[in-house]
Amino acid sequence: MSGFPWADVMGFGLGTLRLAPQAFWAMTPREIAAAHEGLAGRGRAAPLGRDAFDALMARHPDGEGR
Image 1 (tube, rainbow, N blue to C red):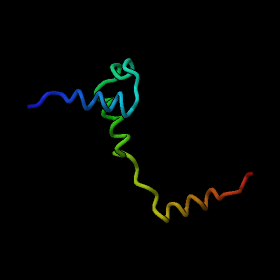
Image 2 (cartoon, one colour; image 1 turned 180 degrees about the vertical axis):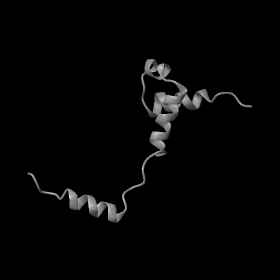
Image 3 (cartoon, one colour; image 1 turned 30 degrees about the horizontal axis):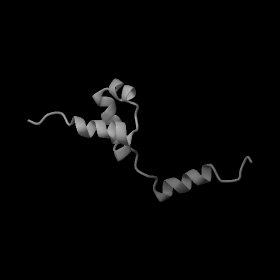
């Protein structure tokens, strides 16, 4: 079993996220993981398909109400 990857986590929090040290150390491991997943795109909804996009445009056409 290997140890916790502190260098990687610190590099992500302090470097990639540009957190201040106080903010980084105040985060829980679960919060760091959620931030990583958010940047990696996990947990995001799939992009709209053409039919759903067309339906959205029909409900909210450009130029109305301006």
